[in-house]
Length: 385
Image 1 (spheres, rainbow, N blue to C red):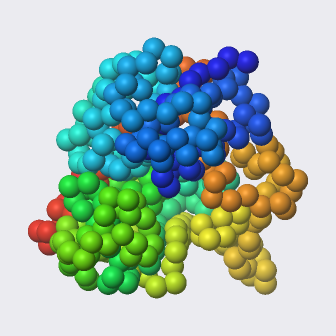
Image 2: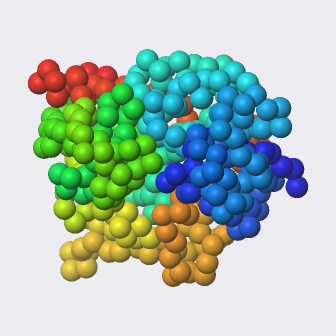
């Protein structure tokens, strides 16, 4: 089997999810190219070494530029905060590497345009990791829409809700700082919802949006705690300003005439990672909830009156995309499996010399819409895309 060496930049939350996928995908899927976990990079050598030992990376590095400069590295996986995506991706593409990048693609549309242009020019496989596209139930929704099962689409209703910053004592992590995160949930969460909507419904023509801030100052954490998603460990006692939105509610008009809504917040108590959508069409409806990610709900208007109602499809049969590589029918899969599917598709794209979606161009288009949403909120008007 042919192999290609991977260099992972970043080793915390996403580093774990990506490492798990790079390591285990060849064990479950038949792959013509096997990814080799060659080197992982982070600023703190001791912590990175502990991570490498646990996850199976062969080497460590503390300077990402040295990873990219290595002739034996074929793929750069970018799993660091958004403010570093542009610089690392541009250098990786210039060095002739394939790039697997976390979302959102960049800090702003200007950066994203540069990244998309260079990616297209390079001819290298480039991917933005909107992992939820690769849930088998979402793939089934796409198949049913393409088959005309729900007819002409009228409405998209999306919601991505979390609650991890409701506590006013939660520290000012990088996620809440515009100079490192770019946006709040509009970029972090609505980018996922928007990617699903573009995948299932189509491109957006215009947006209206409103945002809110509920807690404007938070305690400053020390560097060691800056990547945490819970608690107040490592706080310094000093406070800083929250410079991104806490919530964003956006409505859109799709180019095909459908209307859509996107609700996103980190102030929804009880909602941990509630990624949800409803799609309504002339022949029926589809409903997906990540908290029940192996299921897709389907309403068929053409059923006889006496048996109409939403039915739940358990998306665990071997005929469903990706499932045959995993477990027998009825044995559910989870969040981590979407990352495996992304790795498999990414390596297949390299092997076949084809595109993978969403790519950097998709990431650019999403940032255009997300930025337009924030502009709409600031100016109080509809913004055309």
